[in-house]
Length: 239
Image (cartoon, rainbow, N blue to C red; front, side):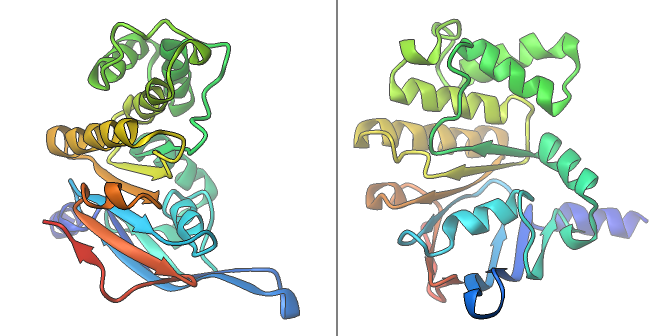
């Protein structure tokens, strides 16, 4: 039991092993992923790059246990995702994974604080802790003075920071971000990546993001290129 626990603690946060995802059947069969493999260590910032349709979002959804592979498996800190029930995946997602969407996905009539607090409710955080956790997360991303503003009263960068605060408030091990800078100009995009860098450096969180932006790729630890559902053999390591 001790050895088993030690092995889990030494395992990558995420280990994608030969994952294939097929949509449709017969003549309508489409391969979104073809034997993709990727390992994500603790405290790393990784970018997945590729053209539209290359499989980036599909891979991110499978990493976040929002979808299941047709073949292959994913290990979460040494735990085999294929052996998890849907309820177990849901509980893991609520406690260990933070999701950030390209469109921010904020509730428009709620303030930044209320959006983050709602995320904590969904994650099952105790009511007594939610105010502190929400304020802590918003302060971390530099929104201590803007937390009571609604999305329409905030810039695009501030909305994305709110989305990041919502994703980190429950203190997950892994952040998955789908094109987090796509709606932002280059200056704002760089600021968002700097927030991710601080998350990695300060909290030891692992971040995997998808991007088309070549400037962003210069700021991450590793870049993995996807093409036709495959991860290129020559992935780039920045550190």
